[in-house]
Structures are given as C-alpha cells and as structure tokens.
Image 1: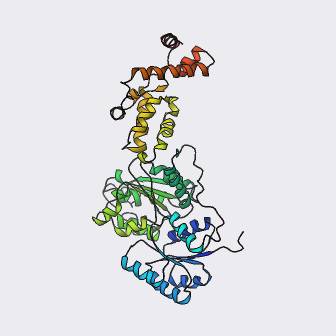
Image 2 (image 1 turned 90 degrees about the horizontal axis):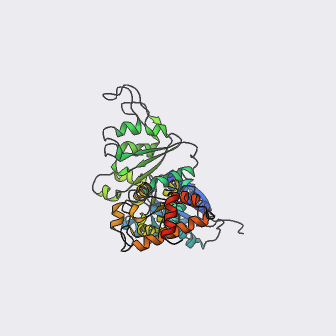
Image 3 (image 1 turned 30 degrees about the vertical axis):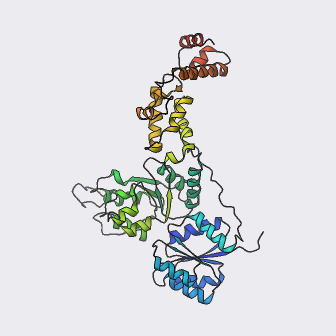
Amino acid sequence: MMEQRHRIAIVDDDPGQRQLLANALERAGYETLRCEDGPQGLAAAADASLMLLDVRMPGMSGLEVLERVKRDRPQLPVILLTAYIDVRDAVSAMKQGALDYLEKPVDLDELIAAVDDALGAIGRAVSQGEAPEIPRGIVAESDAMRRVFQQAARVASSEATVLLLGESGTGKEVVAEFIHQRSTRAERPLVRVNCGGLPANLIESELFGHEKGAFTGADAPHRGRFEEAHEGAIFLDEIGELPLAVQPTLLHVLENGAMRRVGGGRELTVDVRVIAATNRSLEDDVREGRFREDLFYRLNVFALEVPPLRERRDDILPLAAHFLKDEKRRLAPATERVLMAYDWPGNVRELRNAMERAGIMADGNLVLPKDLPPQLQDAAPAGTSGTVLVGDMREIQRRAILEAIEKTGGNKTRAADLLGISRRNLIYKLREYGL
C-alpha cells in the first residue's frame, strides 16, 4: 500500500463541477484540493501532483494560471477543462505545456484514464468500474445500461447538475430517480416537471410560483415547483421545450440559487439540485436560437446518454417478462423471436404498452405472437407470426401443457389453472396431442 496518495488540484469557478470531479477522483483513490479561482490554484500548485484547470474563469483565466504554473513548477502536469472548445486556446495551451485538453461535460472514465496516464496510476486506492447495485424494479441486463447506471452512481453523490440525453421512452426518468435515491438529498422530494406538457403562458408560474394579483385569475399566492423541491431535487423533463422567455429565470436560479415569484419583488433562496432531460439536440437548438447557450452550459455539467432499446437488446426479454409479471403470463419462444427482431422506435415505453396489450389478448398464460400489436406482427421474421406456422404453434402449446403437467405432478385441475384454461379444455388438448 502506498504511504501517500497523489493530490489533484481542481481549479474551477463552478462549485458543482468541482464537487463532481472531486468525488470521481476520490473514489478512484486520489486526494483532491478544491480551488474556486486562479489565485487559489496557484497556491495549491505547490502541494499538487497534477492540476485540473478550467480555461474560462472570472479574473485570472486558466491560460494565465497555466503560464504561471509552468514558470514556477514546470514539471507539474496540467489538464485543461473547458465547455468552450476553441482551437486557438487549445494550440496556445499545448504550446504553454498543457498535458491534455478535455471538453466539458467531462467523461469521468476518460478523465480518470487521463489522470492515471499522467501519474502512472500510482496512489490508486479504490478500484474503478465496479457496477452499482441495481435496485429492485429496474431492469438493466445489457452492458450499455449497466454503464449508464455506473456513471449515474458516480454523479449521484455530487451536487452537479445532470443532463440526461436520449430518445423518448428510453427510461430517462428511471435514471433520474436512481440518481436522486443515491444522493445526499434522497430523504427530500424529487419534484417532476414535464416542460413540454405545460402551457407556455403558465410554465413560469408553475416553476417559480406567483404572488396574489400577478395576473388575471391569480387570486392567491402560489408556491412553484422549485419551492416545493427546496433541499431536494427537481427533474425537468423535455427541457428543450422550455420557452426562451423563461430560460433566463432558470439560468438565474442555477447560477445564484435564488428566484422571484411572478409578480413578486422579494428574492427567495432555493437549494435545489437540477436533473434535466431531453430527446432533442440542444446544441442544434443553440445554433438555431431556440435555446440559450449559457443555460445549455449550466445544464450540461454532467451529460449522460440513455441508449435506445434497439442498442441494448439484452434488455428486451427481461423487460418484457418484467412487464408481464403481474399478469402471471410468459412468452412463447416464437413471441420472443418477434420481440427480439423488432426495432422498438418507441423504446421501453412501446414495449410496456405492447406487453399490456398482449396480457389482455392472450387466451391463457402463454403469450403468442398473435397477441402482440399489429406493428410487431407486420415486422415479424418469416415463420414467427401468430397467423403462420400452425405446426410451430401446436408444438409450443404441447410443450406448455407438458411443462404444466410436470409442475403439478399430473394434477389436471391445477395444470389447467396454471395454463389459464378450463379442465375440460386441457383434457381435450391432452387427447389431441396424444399425451
């Protein structure tokens, strides 16, 4: 065991970013020195083994700090971090001796790898890559989703703002709940807001509240969702739908932890962690003037992409079984083949709805391809549709009956109950199949 671990100086004016990086590095076995500006970073350089340095800070910029550090401690490795990729800055930084240049939001695995490479992985006391325990009720069998929850577990204990990306229906709200439940705010509420589901003229009042008389119909003061989430967290789903007029108010809350109700003159302090989600490209929205660039960077402290279901096919059958659990039904092999062959444009939400329908349509406890929604049957591989391959369907039924008889020790009444058919129907099937 090493007698002394490496110390990493984190120089960044964003407190959420400092905590996020510190948590990741400390879990990786490093010690950290947190610095909120350039002068503090220069003071910490004497005790540091490596410096993580934000480029754009008020007062002394990161490039100015880099110049001073390389003059006073030329051997100190410096990795620059920035949300504003600028080729000129990058070239200038490399000329001044920066070791690496990483874009925000920082991929923590990439960051740890860069630090390890710079320091030779000396001083590591905690192993990386341990998969977090997945709570009951969450299905994550695929490597892709386990990586998502691994990253989510890392960011959970920080105060960093999280931006969840991915197509509609992939399970971003489940990931948000996972992050909240593993955070230090778990005992406080996670308030959910669908920004796309609120009328544009009411969303500011809904988020930040209003005072009596603020507008027609405001007959009494109203606490907004941010006040409800005080000392907890707020999940802003479909953040890309937030009207431009409301975005400066949200930015003010993120930067200052303070807000005013609509029609109010008194500023209220709110302590809220923000988890946002979108199925849109906010970068495109910024370029096209639909989303503020400064708000995007404030939200994009830690971005986490939830992959679509078609890219994590190991989750399809476990999820389907999970959604059928309350129905006490199971999937026929041919049905499984249909589910695995489909591309799931609606992702997990579509799969849940398909299983709900199948549970209603199934005659017994066995879900057949014919019980699935039409779009799945139309896309099914040749030979797997519920209207095709009668012989295959007979074999499925025969195996199901044999399995039920075996499980019940030959008790026909119990076997019929297990199959979801009448005892008379079971006896008929036994004769039909010569069993």
